[in-house]
Length: 87
Image (cartoon, rainbow, N blue to C red; front, side, top):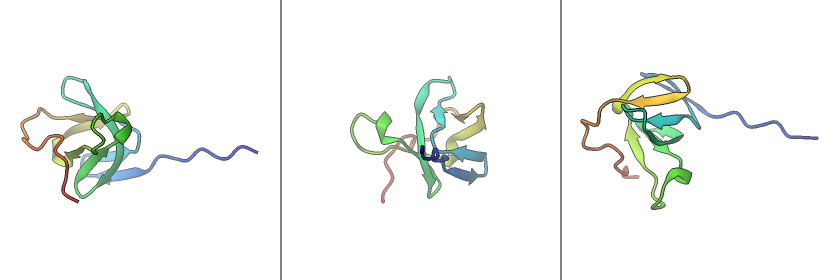
């Protein structure tokens, strides 16, 4: 008997609903990462996408839109883009 596939977590934000596993792209549609979770006003990217082992966080304020299974970021005017958050 096969077990049911686990549904991705869904996170409600002011920009819309973000699902675990969604792709995050920059304003030029370049891959930034994959959503692991949303907490404390930030998107935590999946560590599987990371090269240095530290989890990357992106402030929700950088979201330009959500659509077609992607989180689209605005231009990189925020100096904290991709900065690791204090835990």
